[in-house]
Structure formats: structure tokens, C-alpha cells
Length: 401
Ligand code: MG
Image (tube, rainbow, N blue to C red; front, side, top):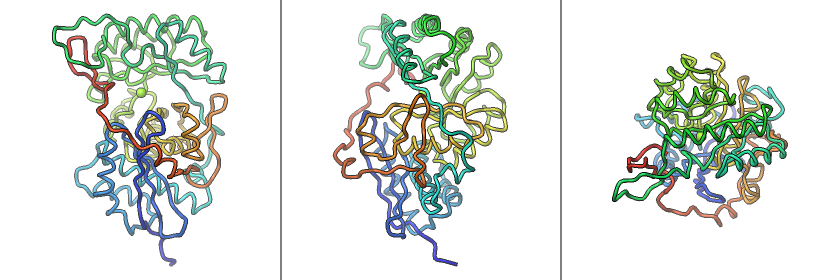
């Protein structure tokens, strides 16, 4: 038996080419020139992921056989005894994706080939339209349609909406205030206008972003049924998943859920009870390609499709991982896409390309993506306390962002 290729060194690369703090892991092997990249981006707590990697996961990984992805993932998950959670899952994802990248390079095949080959040529994507008024949102949808997008997420005034008059108590602290009740009224008006303006052909999506009380979500899901959404996203918080049953009882609005999930039990219950239609985990947040593949195939048995989380707080390496799963998955649904600026393409050569509403692979071995570390170092992460996640109801109560 030939000597295994092992992990020689691991670098944690922090960079901020656009809005989000990105964490990318580079696994360097004992084979000269052979390395892999993985996404470990937890944009709001990136220093914690860096510390988890440097203090714990990297020492655990040095000297390990790079071919043993499955065994490494399982052992990395249990080695800390206390498992799951966004920090450790992201750290492990950085390693897991990099090992898939390395395996692809060794096999001289793209990762989708290792998974089972292409089921489709490209992944249909959706992008985000927003606006201050229903008219503006409709115009933005039409702009994306003219660029070839067939699926568009529609929001107005960002998550939770803006523009409602806040009836605050005296001494109310600073924060990102929103009025949940006004939000539902405004969104219904917006959706009615957009649907009337753009017609039935374009697929529309909407993200509640866990902003409503569960009973208001049940009513909202029923009220928007008439607009024939492709899906309604994060209708409820992970803490309120029992309420999905109530939504199912009153309407057939398709439900997408999962970007905050950490633990397989969170999606297992929803899948096996057929309470959701799309799985949309943030793949680095659940530990990488290996657990995403497991969740995806489990969903396939129950008719649940994929819609992996894909905004700018997924690094381009993470987007590449999404794409490889999308090309192979028997139950692919849709892919979220954030339209990176050109700097990101320079920093991460091989970043997936979207043409006419479809995301295409570059067919390079592995994940097909690289990083220009010199350029990445020129855009260090800016530290600070996140403002938009200091979300409050009109009376000042902190709520989920
Ligand atoms: Mg979302």
C-alpha cells in the first residue's frame, strides 16, 4: 500500500471583499502543491470560528489521511464531546469542504462527479429584489427578468419592512425597530401589486426571516397563498417548528426552512412529517458537504427539495460547494444567489458564474475555486458590533433579526 497523503498544515484566511466577513480554510497536504479550500464563514462571529480552528480543529487534523472524509467528519464532530452549534460546525465545514476539494483534485474530477455525476447542466438561481414601494419592487423584478432571472425573491424595505410609524415608549433604546403587524399588511399590498404587474410566469419568493409571532405567520402564509409563491422562507424560527403543522392545515403555500439549523434533528422532524417543501441550510453552518449530502438524500425520500442558503455571507468557496451539490442532487429545487462584485471574482478565481438565470460550473477538478491570498490580505475584516441584528419591536423588546 502506498503511503497516504496527509494534512501538513492548515491556514485560516479572513477577508472582507464585500459586506460580509468571510472565513476560508486552506488545507495543505504532504503532496507538494496539493491543497483544498473550504468555507467556514460565520460572518457575525468569525473570530470565534478562527479560534476554534486554530486552538482545536487544526491540531486535531495535522497528520490525518486526507482521503478519509467520512471518518474525519464523524470524528471531528464527536471529538469535542459537546457537538453541533454554529462555531464548531463552521470550523469542521472548512475542513470537510477542503477534503472534498482535495479528493476531486486527486481524482481529476469535479466534486459533482464524485457525488454521482450531473443530473442537470446548471442550477437555476433566484436573486433578491427589494424597493421602498410596491412599484419599485415590481420594477426591480422586471429588471431581473430582463437579465434572464426566472425566480426572484421580493421584499420591501428589507426584513420586517420599513416605513411603519413606530409607537415607541419614552426612553426606548437604539436598535433596528420594526412593526410586525404593519409588515404583514404592507407585504400583502406589495405582493398583490407585483403579481398584477409582472404576471404569472415569473416565480416569486418571500423571506419572513422569523419576524412574526407564530399565529401571525399562520395567517400570513394563508393570506399569500393566492399569489402562488414558489416558496415562503423562514416563516418560523427554529424554536417554533411545531407551528409548521398549523400552516399545513390552513394552506398549500410551499415552505422553505433551515438556514439557521445546526442539528440534524431540526430537519429530520420537519422532513419526516412532510411539514416543509425546501431544505435551505447554510452548508458551512451544518458542517460541510458531508452532512448536507446526508440531509439532501433524506429529504429526497420524502419529496423535499433543496434551496441551499446562498447570500453574500456564504464565501465563494461555499457557493461552489452549493453548486456541486445542486448539479448532482436528484431533489434539487433552486439555488439562492447574491451576485458578487468583480473584486470577488478576482480574489476567488473560479467563483461560480450565472448566465440567464442559471449557475454554471467551470469543470475544474475539485470545487473548481481558488483564492488569491495576496489580494485577500488587502481586504482585512473590519471589526465592530453588528447593528442590523439589534432588532426590536416598537416597544423595544429584542427579537430575532
Ligand atoms: Mg433567508
